[in-house]
Image (cartoon, rainbow over all chains, first blue to last red; front, side, top):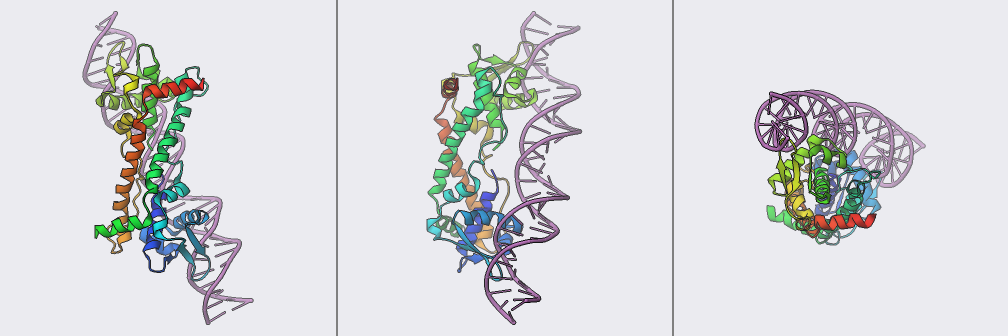
Length: 139
Length: 139
DNA sequence: GATTACTGTAATCATATAACTTACAGTTAA
DNA sequence: TTAACTGTAAGTTATATGATTACAGTAATC
């Protein structure tokens, strides 16, 4: 899977953790251990899906849009990484006469999509708040 | 995800589809559209997990071990690709004082493992036989 | 209105991963 | 003894991923 999901969750957790729920891409990048451009790309996606608001210019940055208890890991997954679970290599050849060779890909695609839904559904049961609580239990 | 899973399922489907349930790595590779060495690697793994029997030497190859209705996609997944769902990139730094930076990785690992179990559980409800039936419905 | 500190986005480069190829030892049927 | 297989690993190439750099756009502040 794409690691952008990890980055998205981590960034949102960081915002949720901050008293004012606001930080710049550089500050988030330091916490996540990656570069600011990557953070901005992921946050831009999260903004489009309503999970953060952004402010450009001096004193700008990212701020959580909503309560940590109301943002689920499933929602984040769907916004950032939906469809990245399946392998991007294709087996078989659609032009072959053997039905296994020509149709396995198509059938497996459907099955793996359904499996991904179950994956996502589980993540929907966990909120950012829940994750913060788990983190606190580590201390 | 690792595409070896696709290859494993496809290969087993092919064996299940054949009247005598037996084929060489070269024959399977042609059907899957990859090279024989790769097939042998995956099949070797499936043998260790009891889903195929192999015969070396002249006239050898791979033969399905068990009925198509009794081999589930979940079992194949667990044998070949368990743990490959999560990203192999790590966010944060365990040595940081900020709990979000130092513990997100650990907490997310646990959550994603659980999510993977749900993914696998769904696949357990589908047998090779079921997949062959779906393929037939494509025709 | 100029400056500074931000985001948004894309292009390029480096590196890690995945897949292919080749090779060869071991095995077994004929 | 030979031919047709598997088992496995090493070397090579292709692709995907992540880092870096760059720069235009925006807004607060002086």
